[in-house]
Length: 95
Image (cartoon, rainbow, N blue to C red; front, side, top):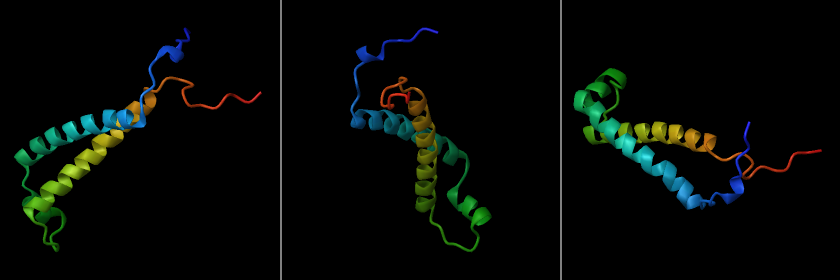
């Protein structure tokens, strides 16, 4: 297997790495929320899932968006973790 020289790759700052995860996850969460709530009303979901709690439509939209953002953020974070170059921040192996 060919070992690429990772020393030539530019190092990204933590803010750039966080932005590379937050922006795509935010964008996908917006699209997913729009598509989901185009077919389902939060008040109907409230009557099915939480019949004893009074949840407003705005709270349903907000909770749905943040749940979608949490899910897509998790997926983007795992992808970013898997795409790290090998040996970037790792400690040297024990001998």
